[in-house]
Length: 456
Image 1: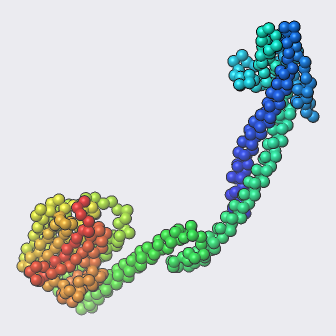
Image 2: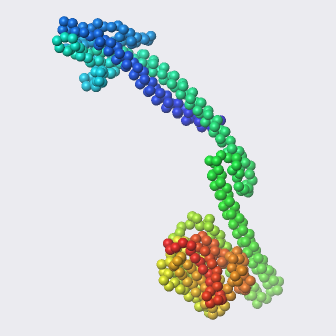
Image 3: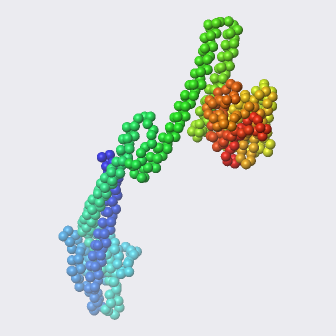
């Protein structure tokens, strides 16, 4: 019924438009038919004009006027004028057409005028009569009131409107029936979706819907798959955050309990120092996890990107880690020779965090007096490298170290195991790939971030 209600408004509008144009067509048709009768009557009268003794004579054929007779109370008027404009027969005051009215090839002028208090339709026929010494011009005017025309146009309009109305109503019913039948699978689909549990995001079955609707259902299924991945990522993040924060907090609580039970200023000082170290580590872990959540590809879709010069990024970031490197007597250098033009589209803050995590790992796990080099390359693709001569990562672990909270077998320094996971996420969000290799020296680790496209 709702669908029928939707169709009712357009149906009424269509009927109104159809009635308007049907009325115009019926008036034109009726006028054309009666104009032919007027012309035929004028022709019949003109054929009876003759010349006798040099003057025009009219033998009015009443059959000519009978052509215009009808059962309606319609009035017919006629007038025949001679060459000097005087009336030979008929109504002297019957108006002639305007002087500049156009004539057709037969010398006829169809026009409407007023006569005896009402409108009339008239035809003026201009003829030249031969038979005397010189040809003489004659004008035949025949007019009628419009009762028959109105009746005929109304009849044509009503019959056409009734016929077309039936067709329109029948078409509307067919459309209503067809749409109702066609929408039935969609209604079943709607009911099945409403009956689903809130957490049910399984693919929607497309076998019971029309072919035209299947692309929409497939798009919804694709969207649900992406939504599942997003929710799974968020759930994994929450679980990881819970695990990583619960353990340090439990350890700090235990230290505080021990210090309260045993007392002593030296133990309290040591406990405070341990708590400070633990709080710093926990704060870094929380910061890394929040940064990891920000580097999810779906979280970066709406963020603005801008050109980032890799050489400037390398110099600025390395400068921030000079103090940490000096504490371990590590030689930290930047090599950006012939690469000042290397520019990528990205997020400067995230790319800074990417390089900061690589430098943090390199300084943290390299022995004292080691060497760390940050390189920038422009060709064949933009490239960022961090090379150290520390313990390196075994070949069989180079894929696993990108997992969250995984720490290699040879790692002894404290850490959260999130650094390389963050690096890979940021690189992926910028269209880059992270590769681990052994330096040419044969020991240490070379981390290469390679953009898959050329310079921007």
